[in-house]
Image (cartoon, rainbow, N blue to C red):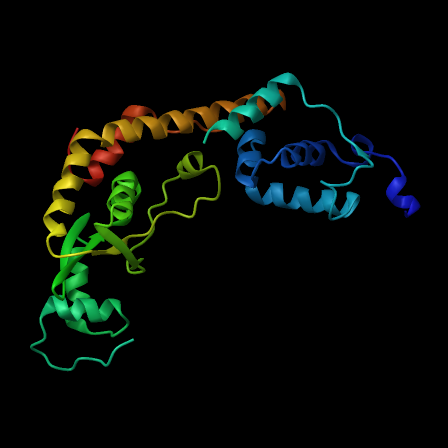
Length: 268
């Protein structure tokens, strides 16, 4: 074995204070945005600090057995435990093409004005059934797709709908608090098209989505809020232990409910 690998290295002597704090949290599995929130610094700063740590300790510093790390205090360990537990066709040139047919062709890669206009009108609503040959397609807006995710999962698992493709014509839904719900990078949610499995399923899909909004949306938002609050509390405890300002809290439950309801025009 190389002698340099056996040499004991004390991380406290090799790293600057901020480098050490970032490295300790990274070793425990925190993502960059979580470290940034806990320490009150920018994600870019976290990245640069980790690069410095790698320069000083080597690229595989997390796995090296010869590096001695300081023990995390009980408050930080408790907060970390909380975080872990949270949980293409031939183009149609005929001007008399039906708008719904042109729209389906447009989705399959055949650009045409009729289909584009039809889809643009569909995007004005949070969801809408579109004719798809003898069947139908479901268009779900970006924000709606985020808030009714469990309902769409149920319909998909029970084979009422099948995912077709994301709608690149719509901007992703990416609220500032999104990382609190995902525990990772805020990639956002795009609008999407789903195929209704058969013609008879269209009415059921619409009725089910309406039922879900009336009976299940509030419970789902409440669960999301609980997860967000849990992650924020854990990150805040880590921040306080490091002597940093606590991260900005997520919206309140009332604010989240209001945002979700506004997406669907449900009012207060």
